[in-house]
Image 1 (cartoon, rainbow, N blue to C red):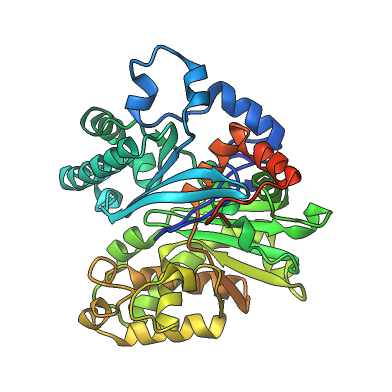
Image 2: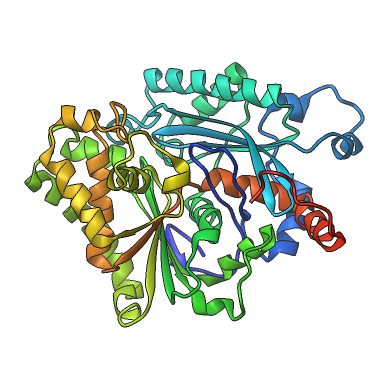
Length: 419
């Protein structure tokens, strides 16, 4: 793969969880199979984001890490959210032991100004301090902390990264669009319907949207999904991907997110469809999925919010949302109802609230554009993604997948709470 849109070759990457209690998943990284990923990771993976762990005065070196309990951290700093997971390895993946999520709107106004604002950076640094404290309190031994679209495009992102290092004690890595796309696939791998021929994995973010088409015939064998490396194998199915420069924050800023009419909603949909047009012209997935079994798999706040509203949840419940199925009609019914609401009525929705009420219809418009370009009747919701993928990658690199396999063969009991 190369550039913001490309044909895919086998590669390995990662997964996510929003309101986490417990979760497990697959890998991350640049390319190669699981063995190559593990070898590469041990030698040069940027995987010590907590500076106390990376730069502390422990002079015993690598052997000390092997003796300490393995606790891993993963942070996803997006345009709209700051999310952290802390987990320990289990027999079939990992068990989440702590989590944090806060809406920080780091990318607010960056589309027009080209810069991260002082106010947005200040909000984000405060959230990062909470994350750093959680990681220290849980004695995290290895971590990877990533930033995505807002930091990729802001001219002052270097200044922000240095402030995060100095003020919060965190070393944050700005990842490429390609890495982000692959992480999304690995993070959702366990929710792919193996009976389908094609799957579109999509992640509607704040400043960009990642679209990855999988051709499941490329697996060429029964897919077990039992270990971390099983999840990595799905990377061989990536047929093509693109990163749209459109997310819920910049689309809402462009068209208005508070007072949305049917006309302004359709204008948002048209913008997104125009952005997809060149990718579809090149790869023609509309023709390829005709008369085939195709699945949409969404990993984003948009689809989890739509699911929560569809299920009429009085309060968001990850256990009911993650993995649930929606039809195209379900999605459009929720979107139509939201368009008919006032801003205040959207705020009052328990699965939306004040912080998302001006962004939710921009997300609905992006999803509607996908459904119009590639008609698909089945959508599965994933409340998991980049963070889970980072965790699984680090654990696979450290050999925990192989240890779990040996434990299973020896008949030792599975860790309580792992999945």
